[in-house]
Amino acid sequence: MVTELLLCRHMGEGTRLQNDMEALRELLATYEQSIQRKDQVISNLTAGLQHHRNRMEVQRSFTEWKVKHNDAKREVFLCFTCFLLTFRLDFLS
Image (cartoon, rainbow, N blue to C red; front, side, top):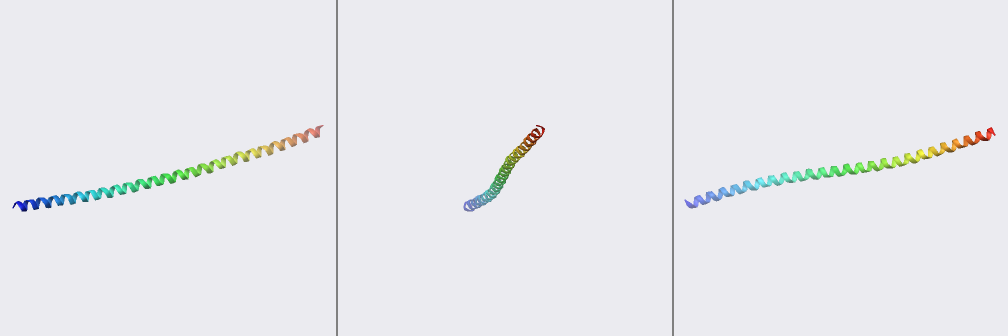
């Protein structure tokens, strides 16, 4: 009778330990999924930042080109204006 009681208690403890192990496995699976989602979020943010950095670099290059282009147009206009002014002054003299 004592042996049966010990055997029954041992089996109950074994069942409890099995349930605890199963709960821990589920918790581990949940943690792994959480880590995978966090890694995916980090990857997406990194890709977004790289895309933004590339876009800013293209915008900076375009702005520099536009400034140089406008300076060149302004210089051509100024030269043409000077030419016309010189031509007009020569014509009037």
